[in-house]
Amino acid sequence: MRAFELAREWPAPNTSICVIDRNGDTHTFGDTSRTSRIASISKLLTAWATHIAIEEGSTTLDTPVGQDGCTLAHLLAHAGGYSFDGDTPIVSPARKRIYSNSGYDLIAEHLESVTEIAFNEYLNDAVFSPLGMATSSLNGSGAKDVVSCVDDLVEFALELRKPQLISAETARIATTTQFADLEGVVPGVGRFSPCNWGYG
Image (cartoon, rainbow, N blue to C red; front, side):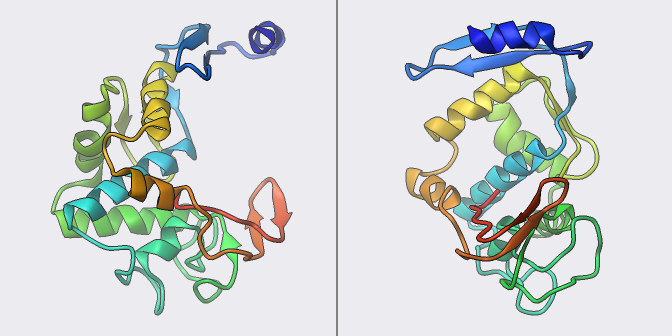
């Protein structure tokens, strides 16, 4: 597989890859059980846990969270008006798309409040454990501090392809552009117009 050939040439001490083909079969390269902090992939897991909490009736997309006029939906779609890392909003909700760790930290705090469960425990109980993501854990921010491995992330990728933890309709909404046509900024990548994004 061409991707694996290229990976052998990458100047990195550890490289692990999994490709899931159209039949759902997996093809791996490297030590796929090796754990590391997965940075912003954490947000996808936090978003999925949020949709589970919504289906459980703990919260709703329209629930106010954060600054005036901001809802859980705004935060999930990076439209809450918060900077990449900063507690103070810099624009009103639904005015710009600003990729935001701060917004996802607010989501985790909100879920802790409504479920009365520490977010790292809720994420484990709602997502990691039922999907068999045995090496995954959260110690820190739900925006960026999940530790996982390729093997576990394959289980989550399969969940994205064929959801078992949330309904097909919720998954469809989660992966559909929200607050369409907003201009936006993705730190380290650039400005986009539009910067379309779903919930995650």
